[in-house]
Length: 554
Image (cartoon, rainbow, N blue to C red; front, side):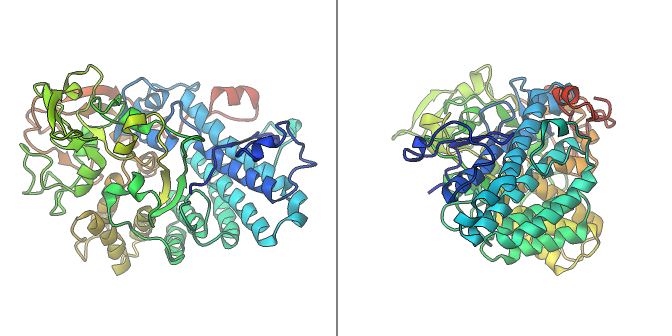
């Protein structure tokens, strides 16, 4: 059964109103003071589940925040003038609602963790000692995860590690580097008290594997190469986790509890749901085609010979999706494929298509080509969708993966490449991810520059639409290259006449493509490298905390 995290509300400032099921709903809904809370294992469990529940905040939508994060980068786009898209196209201000929600969401999780850590001693004599230590470690993990995300979005932020009195609320920033060191220490101290891995159909609670994987991510993002590589190995040594055999099913109900998922946001109908399928899916399937991959994303996938499309003899501009990395078709719905049981076509002349949801199949009008608000790029995301959600696509219960094993392998490989400690273990880590998807192994004796380019491309395609791209383009210092200029969709009535040139970061250059001028420009991005490498600290926080300094040029 799923972890029931969606039924608890714990206030950031130390008040709790709890309800879990019919029995627990009988608990009083007034707010107990810290002097009396926590008393027993039931209340402690409510407290720790409340910490996890706080991680399910939204950027201003009914979609989980990881699914929306790539809209702030070059690989995805939101057509509805969503505040996350303002962060992605350079028009955001310090009152941006998505930035405000991110700040508030993660500080809510931090507040709940701090409340639990400050008050759990009240129950220490009434609960098992091992469980006590585990819950403390779980709260520390949630808090560390939240600070990891805050520093990636905003840079330095106030580091709050206990409940504050009103007179202590004025706080300066702690630098990102200092918080990163604190996170690494927190995870080192918490990991021994966590279970090595979760059992049953639960991936929503912290484990040793999750702690080490998060440590590896934070160390990688902060260029601590040796620490990142060793932490990734520690996550691998926990023993249970590995690559799931079918990449295409990693993000639907079939693979929901597979061995690759290390830590997830969990959802359950009747308690907490999201609307991914409605916002991502096709018009024919009843969706609104809101979040869509860009042409730049499509052109990043290699051909099956392991070469980029500008170098591979297998690339055919007239059949651009043939002989491509299988992850393309498993991550993205492309014209000519079947999506939600319908023939998916976006050429304006494709006015009728096949509906395979009935037997025999029938021809129906194609709203994916004729609807005014059908996909603006000509493509749709396949990740995070499942045909099972089609009848009730605004109440999806599919879990959203925050950490998975493939990322751990790529973290290990990148850390060793950047440290120039390249050996067979690096090749094997990359091979594992690529071969699982149906791609060839990495050529041995490759240069550091080649491997750096390869691992960056692997992260772009393997982790597409999983919310990690923003940190990548920032730490690689390529954001001003990929977040400036046109965001492209396909040519509506044709394909590109030749492949774009791709640089070492797999950034496409369309200047040499004869018919590139016919591509749909869905928006023009601007990027100020003196400002946009960080999000704005919400203006309300600057106004209320006089010691808090706004990020540069916001």
